[in-house]
Length: 178
Ligand code: 2AM
Image (cartoon, rainbow, N blue to C red; front, side, top):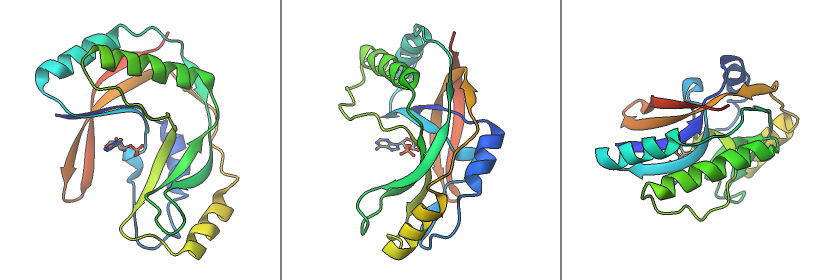
């Protein structure tokens, strides 16, 4: 199974994000039901390792917190955009939760990530890089985007399936925050 750990988003926040998803030619927009904030990509694991990850995640004690999305941007340089995203406004509790999850999955036998955590919601992935002028216009149009604040009360481990219509994410288990 191919796993990742993420925060789901309230319907209203996903609806708001879906309104950003236009005006960039040559990209695949993420379906609104698939919007999420990845906390840790795990990848392909066997059932035994998945059980070890579940046990380690069950042991996490962390507080719930309020989160807000804000701004838009992209990974990759202007001529080689890899993903277009909505940002997450700085929230130390989110980094704290990420760090706990990272420690837990490493305890369960997964190789450390080693990359700085850059929380975001991926909105689109280019088939071909959008023209820089279109990208600039998109960033200018949505630079002031803000979601309403929302409570993060749990995180979820998902399995992902790649189909002809795009990826399908199935929530396997959620873990409550205090
Ligand atoms: P992202 O959209 O936030 O970049 C499920 O596949 C999620 O895991 C994706 O939405 C992506 O998060 C992340 N992901 C997929 N493949 C990855 C990889 N090879 N390395 C890191 N994260 C990955």
